[in-house]
Length: 110
Image (cartoon, rainbow, N blue to C red; front, side):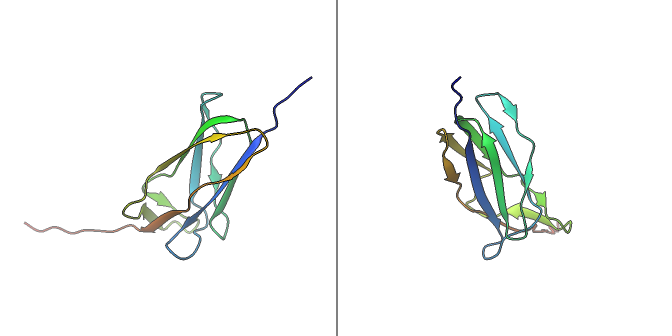
């Protein structure tokens, strides 16, 4: 019996310099047409989706999001909340780093 080897997708969430721990990253698998269970970043901001079927997938980065300590973060200017890939069997693909900044609170007066 023939079975396609799964792929792996890894990446990092940073604050511009260091990894952010506890940020949730989501993956939509177009082959199965389902969301995978989310992965959280480790202490270095690294996440990994293992055993991904070959084909098109979308990574999604919530905006805003919270880290492991409950601090709220938003995507830095110029960052997109989604990255798309076409994964091949047995491929290990690295996503582009995604940068967040502490949530900005703007007070406007009239």
